[in-house]
Image 1 (cartoon, rainbow, N blue to C red):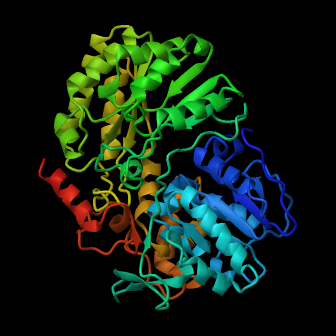
Image 2 (cartoon, one colour):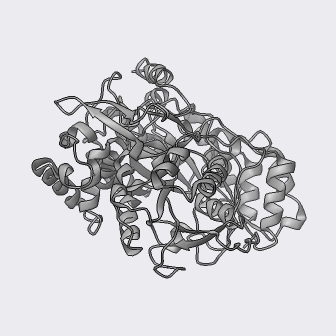
Image 3 (spheres, rainbow, N blue to C red):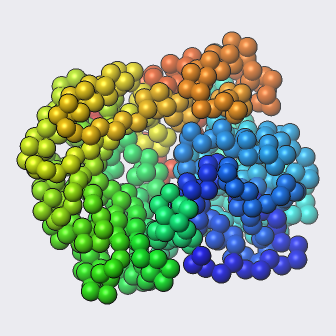
Amino acid sequence: MLFKPAVPESGALKTVLAFPNTYSIGITSLGYQIIWSTLSQRRDVNVKRLFTDQNEISHHQCDLFGISLSWELDGPTVLNLLEKQKIPIWSNDRKENDPIVFGGGPVLTANPEPFAPFFDVILLGDGENLLPSFIDTIQDTRKQSRYEIFKALAQIPGIYIPSLYKPIYTKEGDLININPIHSDIPQSISKQTWRGNSLSHSTVITPEAAWPNIHMVEVVRSCPELCRFCMASYLTLPFRTPSLEEGLIPAIEKGLTATNRIGLLGASVTQHPQFADLINWLNQSRFDNIRLSVSSVRASTVNAKMTSLLSRHGSKSLTIAIESGSERIRRIINKKLSEEEIFVAAKAAKEGGLQSMKLYGMVGLPGEQEEDIQATIDLLLKLKKSTPGFRLTLGISTFVPKAHTPFQWHGLRPEAKNRIKLLEKKLRSNGIDVRPESFGWSVIQALFSRSDRRLAPVIATMKESHNSLGGWKNAYKLARNENLVAENSVAGLPKLPPWEEIVNANWENKKILPWNHLNGPLTKDQLIEHQQDAIDQL
């Protein structure tokens, strides 16, 4: 542990911080680590951790129950965690002596509405901004009623109280707006952005993590490239970088007091303006025994100096995102990457001593045609031929529309399923490893990413069997036919729309979206402009 927890004072808020997955997965989440360490360093908070396979607490009453949600498909597990703690899963079923259930993370920041009926409080954006204000306000109002506490919290920028907002629908079931229930509640809530001089790094290093004994250092936050589908870029704007001398070097030095494994994290690590200087600093002989890994890098920044450094420090592979082998598709999605740059990156990786390269690709993007899939096949085959003896792996995902991106209005395309199979067939037979994500689970991700509160009863129905892919569509159909919405603490809402309308339909820009009352970094008009830029490339 790279920090010293405070000794809780008498009367400290009894807090549980849960992660809806195993300890190995949860403790690897840098976001979870930072929230836990931030709370642990306050004397007025007594915080314990909770995972699906480890429980550091006994089943006792707590004041706050927090959940970090970074992946849509972990969402139903939230309800299992609540039930194990004997906390009512529906927020409006909780009484004055029940814990206040709060949540955060990218899933809840983007579109919290499918999960809104389960949470009392949702923190939108960066915890560095939100946690201090959240805890201070809880302390100031803890002797008041839940309703008065919630009203006070609702005045803090970035804090969303779902029970204080009501979705309004037409008779046909179309969403018109999401309005505050009282005039003294803000009309909208804006995601909060940390703008400090430093970013995060590991506070816990353990052999039990999914990445064992590694000290993670956040080199950048967000990404300046703005690929039109990318929530990791659009939702986290602006692109932020800590200084080398005041941020990155101290973080790495601190980690090296506990481990010799360093991981440099970020959506576009090599675009840190001082990355070359960081490479030079790491080239010192005193770092000869450290193991170094880097998350996905921008292909155009790969060079032999970088790859030889990684090779000397234990890395065997490099990861770049190409999205598509089709130059036309890369223009549509604003992927500023040429075919030549991809080949240069592969050559530099091989010459630097690395043994393999993983390329991330995507199918089902707006505007994609069969010939674009063939272009990806052709590119990989040419790349393999140009780097003999160098292992290539293609990771394939299906485009899933995400809130606050220019492609949020575009549905998931069913033809993506067969296009994944085509890539597998053509590439594997030519010695290229292909690792596709499940198309079926991409469909469920789309269901979560585009739904509103009417999905909550379906999630509740599936909480014990959420690993059943076919069960989700059956549960959705049942809820739609029997209108379970009226029976599960979200009474008064119309029945669910057709499955295809949520998952597959292309929506008109004028459509009111479930997250209409939540402000991301860019306005709706700005996102429409970016969408039009993509359409102009068709």
